[in-house]
Image (cartoon, rainbow, N blue to C red; front, top):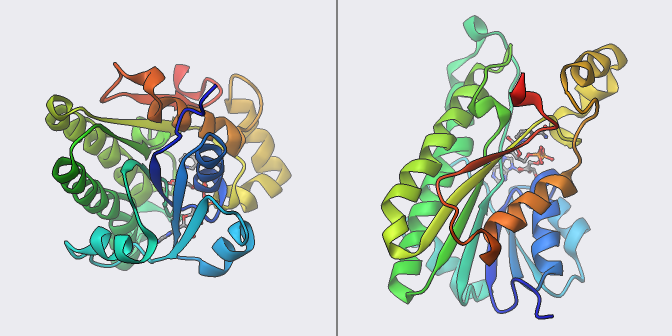
Length: 249
Ligand SMILES: NC(=O)c1ccc[n+]([C@@H]2O[C@H](COP(=O)([O-])OP(=O)(O)OC[C@H]3O[C@@H](n4cnc5c(N)ncnc54)[C@H](O)[C@@H]3O)[C@@H](O)[C@H]2O)c1
């Protein structure tokens, strides 16, 4: 059987670690040429040095992104028929809402909302110029739907990403570009390592999850790959919970 993503290029952000890395590896395994972007160049190097179908781009998404960003990437890394964009990079700063400092708030919104917005915009412009279908998968969160304590900027950013997904999906459906998201529940990555290593906190959290365990990055990557694939050809504007049942309660 021909691999699902043979002939496509995929740009995956946050690809040095966790969910983004699992998505990059899954898409590459299924035939895509992957451009793996992350601010952590050393981690990209450790993970992908010598992997032929994954090229590495060290880039901090916390700053402004010029209109020429994808063209400049293209000149070095040959984006080719860039058909898939996975917005997985994200940051989470924990602090009570009344103490959350403005810089942290702004950084969270810059990385978690403005960067996916700008990248999606540039991806779509390029797609419309080249013609043919495209697909965006945004890594949202259960916190796109429900708040958690000490996460005010993160929760706000992830609910914005939910509506970013729907707004882009609505406008781009007539152009054959599908835009969806996943809403991961608590998944074993660096983002929550300290919490998971605190036995009492881990017990409290798993006790809140109907399936009684954390997710793993591969389970998120499977959902990303499904939404990016032709098997999801009639799905757009959806944000799929991958959360062990968290949002059912
Ligand atoms: N782990 C979870 O439980 C969970 C739950 C819901 C949603 N998410 C979301 O999943 C996505 C991936 O997170 P993860 O859990 O894999 O965490 P992670 O910390 O393992 O990975 C995040 C990656 O994003 C990169 N990144 C952060 N800021 C960046 C920037 N300014 N520019 C470029 N790259 C940057 C990091 O270097 C890292 O490689 C995030 O959007 C996160 O909000 C995670």
